[in-house]
Image (cartoon, rainbow, N blue to C red; front, side, top):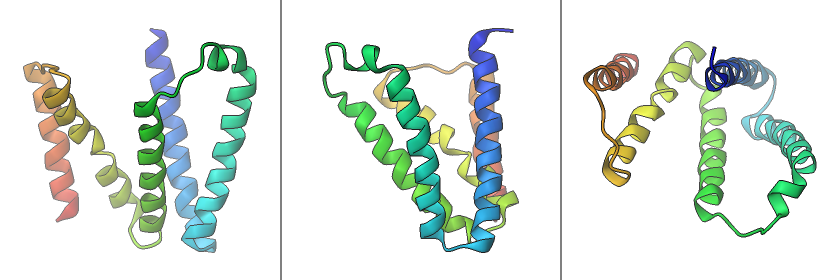
Length: 136
């Protein structure tokens, strides 16, 4: 099995567990405190990553603005997701929020000039249809 595939499956397990635990946490606390503790967990992973890879990160350092905007986008999205956890069924919220790759594909088509084959187009179409079904 290729390394990227194993990493993707592990990421999927982490995202699934994280969403589930976020819902469990929202049962017992306010959304803002749930995000606070999610941030503490993220900061722990971040700090460990930076310490472990500090030589590669800070060698010829320069600001990567798209990466910075990526972090801001994910952070804001995470806050919105955590707030939504309080009010929505996890079985609807997670599949609905997981349709974001379809929008990412559209952005890649428009701004990066990427092309899709018929199977890939069908996959994106099914994702959009599933979001429409979940949204009612």
